[in-house]
Image 1: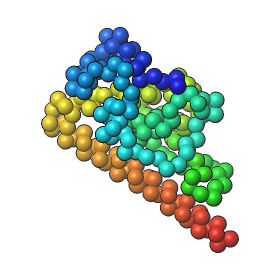
Image 2 (image 1 turned 90 degrees about the horizontal axis):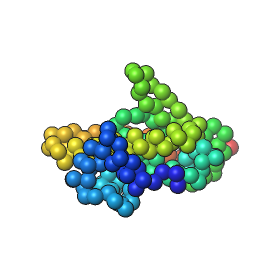
Image 3 (image 1 turned 135 degrees about the vertical axis):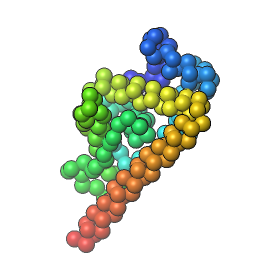
Length: 186
């Protein structure tokens, strides 16, 4: 995998403008040396709740280079970006297990939204998304420990994002059910 959590932690420590992120996070959640990202509180307590029941359409050349499920969870859980999910246009499937969804990611930059489909991204862009989203989760989880009011605010936003994700998934599931019923009729 091109993204390595432990290398990322070491990089944060080495950069003056970023080392406070890992110092704060480590103060509240313990040292992050040789820790799997799946053992972090932000993964176990939050990201793990975002289960995508469909396969993602990803860049073919990078298929084996990244943990796409983890990246999708980071996108779904982010406070700083928006996303849409839709079925691949020429998808002809007979079951939900075969369905592939496209992930459209929108981020605000200088007052305007930049939108890209996950399958169109280059490896350096994917790596940068991992960095941005993990930094965001570390900062939010540190903030939750620092201030009780912020803790409640962050938890409320997390709950909202999880409900919104489930709503989007339910809409997609309903579409597959509708398409299946229509196919059966014909």
